[in-house]
Amino acid sequence: MLSYLFKKAHQAGFMNLKTILPFSLAVALFLLAGFSAIKMNGIIAVFAGSLAFAQDITASEELEEKHIQESMERLTTTPVFFILGLMLPWQEWFSLGWKAIAIPILILLFRRIPGILLLMPFLPKLKNKIYSSLLVGWFGPIGVASLYYAISMTEKSGMEDAWVIPSLIVFASTVVHGLTSIPFEKLYYNKGSRANELENEDRNLD
Image (cartoon, rainbow, N blue to C red; front, side):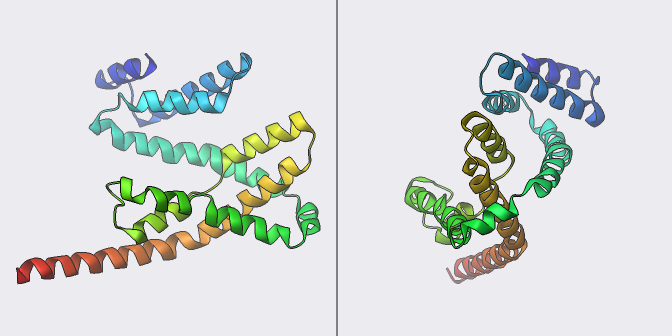
């Protein structure tokens, strides 16, 4: 219903980029607060709402939707990670010893990559593309939602480890994926360009 009203208002010229952003933010807050009030998972509600919202977005509106996503990240993700930096339990991490290094490494390596490799034959865009599959498996940052669940679990269970371990993993994911994003992107681009050149050469020979 909301996506229908959004689309009609946009087509009538009542909305521009400045009004689209507050509308999207208001919908997200409405879903989050509403479902939390009735003791249901607000994060899943926002996800489901955005999925339904996206089904009614036309191709011309998709570009504006991308601008919304970038603006939303600036409004939400950046402050959250700033606050995270203030809350990091350094002493608790140091007390873990070698586990503080082993846990993030194992999580980052085995959380997505094995599953993607197993599913590779069944995914048309990744079939027989080992490098692309490894890249898709590697870039799965652990972020805001994990922090939300970690804080919620800590409050409900009273277990300090419910905050210490997830915050360590989010910190490691932020640093590692942030540092590898540009080098891996350039490497993938160069490899893709080289593959296209070889494919064109083969076509010319044929």
